[in-house]
Length: 84
Image (cartoon, rainbow, N blue to C red; front, side, top):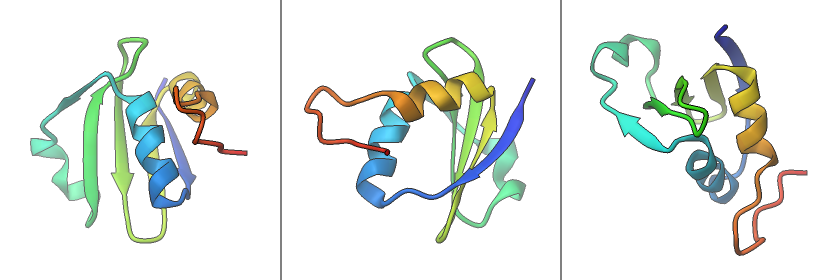
């Protein structure tokens, strides 16, 4: 079941989060009506579809909450990311 989760992260941590959230990206052609910001669509490591809307002051994740939590709790190999 898809959930809608709003959150904010600094740009550097958001970059790491995106890298952990998606294993492949797909064109958001028919999803442009959802946001005035950046839209990322793709597949998570679990193989499920997800969408991330990135606005000026917040992000909105649309997908399975398990995928969001897995990406949020991941650590980059360099150990520089810390979501706290």
